[in-house]
Length: 122
Length: 113
Image: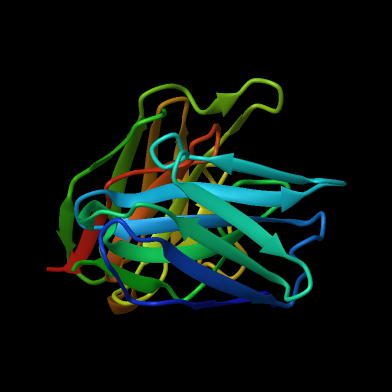
């Protein structure tokens, strides 16, 4: 059974960088069987897919256009984790952030982290 | 982007009765090469992440009770709970997994009447 454990600060100041980590157990982030996503949820924007990474002989990355210029998703195979960095945050980035895994064959989220509420405020 | 529109926003159903939620996509999510509809349904309870119920419009995820069923094709889809149980009180979301960016509907809250 795959488990995703998230960590990171719950409060970030405007214009700073939001950083979250998702530690994976029960699978390898560099396996060919999974894809690793970041999704956020807020009352104003609902569920919003932010981006993903996966390894199929090389690492690939896809980002939502709305955050592409500010978002970096980074795998760390030595720690078996995926990280998210969102730069230049504003209060609009306040949300619950989730990491989630989908199997290679279908882009539906089978395994989820517990969620991290991140508030952007001074 | 494929826009997903759910209706109704909320639904109150008596225990044991049927609940039906609709989801419409702004373009077809039927992939012609495999004749599959790339539409999923999730259930979310308070303070929990969403849980996958159905994918490819009608395939139940392992362990999901068979009172949950999905139907539809192209741009128009339904999630049906055949006999509502107390533990089914939740918000339900559709998601298209046809193209990037992956997009979700706005959610339907199901309550007990």
